[in-house]
Image: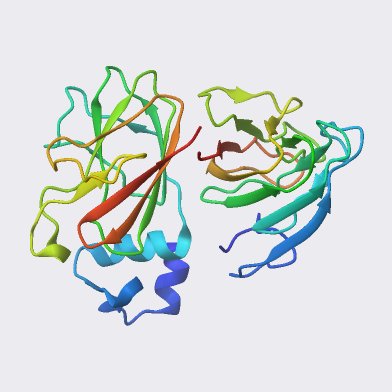
Length: 153
Length: 137
C-alpha cells in the first residue's frame, strides 16, 4: 500500500496535512502510511516496566496490542498532527498506559498530551492515560500536540 | 481504502454509503445480508438477531455500521466458499467470537469494525481475518 502511494506521488518532500499542517522529514513516511493506507501492523507488546521513555511505539493507523504483561506497561502514539487518528486495540491481559511523544518536532519540540475519555483535561505528558484491557481506543489529534481519547464500551 | 477486500461498489478510494439495509430474517451467518459499503445504515431488523455480514477482512479495513432499526442485529465475519470464516471480538472482550456466532450490535447504535489481521491465501482457501468491534459511549 505504501509502495502504491509512493508510486503515485514519487516527488513527495513535504505534504500539507489536515488543517494546513505541513508535514516534513522523518514523520512524512509515517504520515503517508497512516493517511492513505489505514494500515495495521504486527501484534505489539507494551513496554515492560511502563513509563514514557522507551514506551512501545504505535506506528500504524490500527495497532493491535497482544501483550500487556503487567498493568500500566506502556505504549506511545506518533507525533500529534492535527487530523491524525490512531486506533489501539488492547487485547492484552492488563490495562495499558498510553503516552504522547516527549518531543514533537511538529510542535516546536514540546511534549504531546492526551485527554482521557470522559474528561476535558489534558493529562500530564509523563502521566499518560489508561486504556483498559479488552477495549479499543481511537486517539484523535485536534490541535498540535494534543490528543483526545475515545474508548469503546 | 484500496485492496481486494474493498467493499463493493467502490473498489477504489471512496466514501461510499449504503442506506436502508435490511438484516436477514431468521439470522445466522449463511445468507446474512452483506454490508456493501464503508458506511452502512440498517433500517430494518424485524426480529432481534437478524443478521448482516462484513466484507472479507483486510488489515486496516474500517467498516461503520449504523443500526437504526428497532432490534439488535447480529454481525458476522465474512464466510468464504471454503475455509474458516472471519471472526469478530466484541467491543468489551479480548476474545474473538466464533465465526458462526458473530457479535451483537444494539438497536440505535453505531459501531466501527476494524480489521487488525487480514485474510491470507487464495480466494478459495483463505485463512480467517480478525475484526474488532468498536462501540463508543
